[in-house]
Image 1 (cartoon, rainbow, N blue to C red):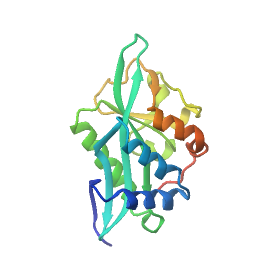
Image 2 (image 1 turned 90 degrees about the horizontal axis):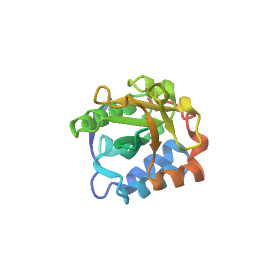
Image 3 (image 1 turned 180 degrees about the horizontal axis):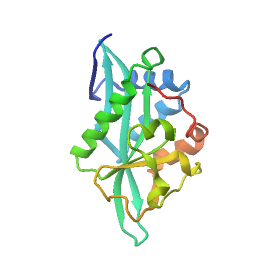
Length: 189
């Protein structure tokens, strides 16, 4: 089995990342999402990571800025995870797990307090994500509450809850085509 190297996305990776997302999800929506976020203020280059097997990109994960609007009016910058993809020929090798673990470590090292994700709660639960509603966090998007999970990187960061707000690029594309997938994706490991 070949070694998996995780590194930051670099110039020239965009098309390979799009191919990974199209292949993993069977459509173009996630590739469009990554392209839209890459061109936005929410994009954090250090948190767009690829998994390389041999000489090829086999997986991708993106963490980007989102906001948590607190009940008292404060706004906290947090991270959102979307998408995380592994090409089908490399699935069930732990590449998705490796990407999530590395992204989480890098996010903590950069000082971000928490990560949220709309996705399969059983899968993300393996990485210490729990229902965001546990902290009183509500999502403004039309998704089942149980599909919105969060993980604190700083203990107590999510205490008091609030309203989760995704950037406009995410919200627009999510409502146009991604919402039917929320919480329904198969595990990429």
